[in-house]
Every structure is written in structure tokens, then in C-alpha cells.
Length: 159
Length: 143
View 1: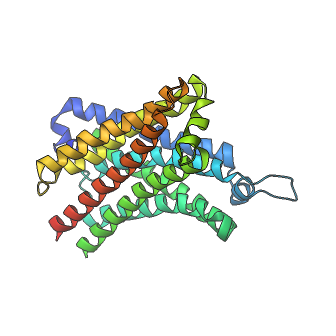
View 2 (view 1 turned 180 degrees about the vertical axis):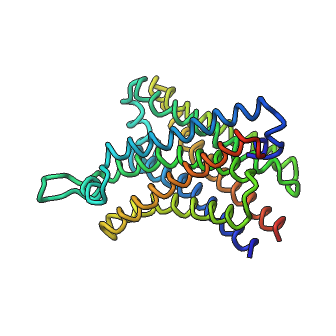
């Protein structure tokens, strides 16, 4: 957000500490979100496909559309807010413009792939679930990397 | 090159937020319905605990999300301050009416079903309008 990006953070020790705390919490939240999804949906593409689309051979019912919508809606709320917060700090990190554009573009594309893959999984089948799983993992990894990069930068008073 | 990427990033982010609002609308339509009768039927049966389970996360997250969205609007200098004020003074009351009408419906005040629907639709329309305004002005500024 603008107020996070409008001042040199290394000059303001209070603001710096607040943002270090926020980044630590967000990185932890991303790790917990990955773990929670691993417990709920599984850790392999097959487990995700079975959970979302069901599996007749193993007597697993598909997830209801309402549950799917509710899950995506709740996840997206948290993930969009995490993206806004981490991206607004990482943008001040002073990395090259190309790297920053790549980070933002890839983060947004992976975040879009997660709900779109899930929503269309009933039409395109397992490819949708795999797209969704890929998007979910890539987004989380990018947020963790971006968060850690900013955290290290702040600790070393780089920006 | 950079301008095109920035445009793409702005478009992707707007798509994400509009997708999120559309998911909420779809969920509301499927779970509750779009007539005052449906709204009364759905919220009339809900316990206070069930209502709070929905109201609490929405109040928390939408407060933060509105702050993020409206702060973008506040920093765009080409938008008339009166238009900005209109967006702020309409979005928050619509949000409160949308979230708290179910409590009144569950207490037997069925009239609030109409207010709930009006506030819900009004909030979504206003939010889309704010995003379109932010997007258009950003394009102009970058251009």
C-alpha cells in the first residue's frame, strides 16, 4: 500500500520493526496455508483430483460445487490481501525493474490459475485441478521468496 | 514494453478482484437466492452463531479490502474529490447494511430482506464502478 511504499524504511526503526513483524507473520501464514491445504486436499496431484472430482473406484464423492465455491472464495480473500502486502514491500526492495515485473506478473498469473482451474475442473477435468494445484504452489512459493527477500533487505537496512 | 506489462499487471489484478466479487455473488445466489422471500427463508432459520460465522470474517476482510481499494482511489489526482467522497460515503454504509440486515431478519424484521438485497447489489455495483474508475485513470496516467 502507498503508506508502506512512501518512506525509506531503514530511516524509521518503528516502521521497519512493524514491517519485519508483518513479513514474518505473512511468511508463516503462507507456510501454514500450504500445510493446511496439504492436509485437506492432499500433497500429490492425484490426491487433489480425487478430493475435487471424486473417484468411483475408491468410493470418494466429488466435492459439491457450493463447497468448492466457498473454499475458493475464502482462500482468495486471504491470498489477495497477502499479495497486496508482500508486493507493496517487495516493490520497494530496489531489485531490477525486469525482475519486479516478472515477480508481479507470475504471482498474479499463478493466483488467477488457482480459482480458474478449480472452477473449470468440472468441464476440463483433471487438467483444471492440476492447473489449480500448480498455481497454488507457485503463488505460495513466490510469496515466501518475495517475503524472505524483503525481510533480509530490511534486516540489512537495504531500503 | 514496460507500459504494456504494467497494463497487464493492472488488468490481471482487476480481474482477480472482480473474480472474487463474482464468486461471492454466485455463492450468495446459490445459497441464499435473489428474491426477498429466499432471503427471509435463509436468514430466518439461521442461529446467531451461524450469522456471526459469516458476518465476522466479512467485516474483518472487507474493512481491509475497502481500505486497500479506496486508498488507490484517494491517490489518483485526476479524479474529482467529490466523486471520491461519494464512493467512500456510499460503499461503507452499503457494506454495513448488507452485513447487518441478516441479524434484523433473523429477529423477525422481514422488511430488511429487501434492504439486504438492495445493499448487496448496490455494494457490488459500486465496487465495480470504483475499480473501473481506478483502472481508467491509471491507464490515462500511465499513457
